[in-house]
Amino acid sequence: MSSHRLIHIHADAPPKPLEGVPCNGCGVCCLLEPCPLGVLLTRRRHGACIAVQWDDMAQQYRCTAVTA
Image (cartoon, rainbow, N blue to C red; front, side, top):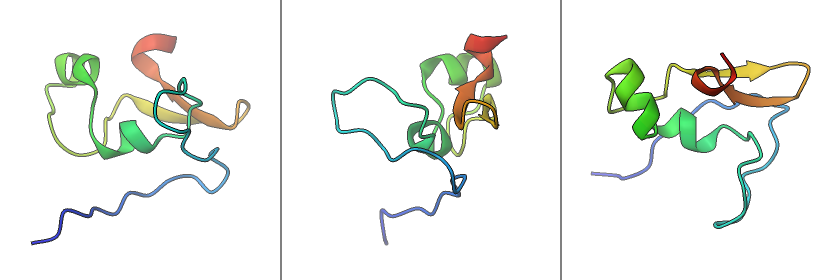
């Protein structure tokens, strides 16, 4: 059994930052699984968080739970 999963990321998304560096909106974490806030709001524990959306103007992913 493989531990690898395929996630689909917008072609213009910034690269994933190094560990310990602040979020840059790359989408990798949120598209892999929801954070604790995402689990609380969406009641989903696995798969892409449904609260994350691509922002064309900012050219990065945004959490709608934070931006709403």
